[in-house]
Length: 411
Ligand code: HGY
Ligand code: MN
Ligand code: MN
Image 1 (spheres, rainbow, N blue to C red):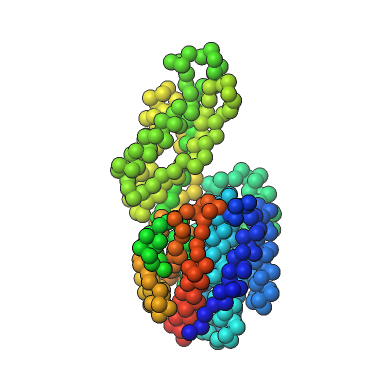
Image 2: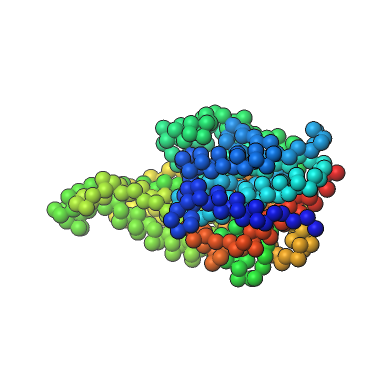
């Protein structure tokens, strides 16, 4: 049975991890940063060294292509993302891109003539430095100019970031790929949870991906002298944010499980030891598996924000940011992955994903599969993120044979 080159794959992972590498072995390579520019350049060189065609689209998505002899053939696509969260791990996203490149090189070296074009892709800004799953949303035509306003960067920061990557503000519109040119999409990704490890299973076959919504919540009070303003008369904006976080945590756990919420950032102004906070800006994100539950969570969280603010004599404004809908993975693709894992002697289970992925975008227009490899202790978005070599290699081999099985189905 054909196998990927494990030595080359692990060496590539090690080499890529040096770009934006952090002292304890993690990676800080947010999209549009200098490290991202360097990571992208690294990928281009690897693709060209492998003798594969390199391509970049208007959203900055990077591809390695192995064409079919039939120019009219559809494209089977596989990949993930090279960007990371700030101070993240070396596997999130990178694993899927490098498994994709490795599978492509293996097929090229085996000189297999396939009835579809093969394309290994890295999507731009999956993690949302500007706008989560920016590249894959542009690819499927799920992004318009107005969506850019919902991003997390100021217009000036966005323009500077796009320029760093050689992109323009409107260029992403040309990245849209017609659905009828695609034969499917497969993403390999670390689980970022403990379910595979706990079950002692090699491969996860993802059934569905959660939807994610995010808001800036602005609690507005009145800045005041921290010494002279009596405690009973303060309109302390941070008290409102703190009270909201405490109650939201209890409410989501009690009423919305397995849905989750997170407040990952807070900006307090004016921001001084001796000034009562006049404003607290809170980054709120929440996730659930159905649109109906997301709607209920949104209503309950925004209502709670207004109530906690009101109880403390504060105002609260909610500014909606980017959102994504939950997505189902393709049943036939799941079966292909399961059969492939079985042929490789690997155990597998089905499970939903609580993290967002480019596969969510792709599932809108083409049959999509998401393959999970185990994460040690479920640690992710953290420099201590770890997937054992054996699991990395298993993920790549499942991808390789899923590609071959799907390509054979196109014949
Ligand atoms: O935030 C997420 O779920 C993913 O890691 N981008
Ligand atoms: Mn991530
Ligand atoms: Mn990821």
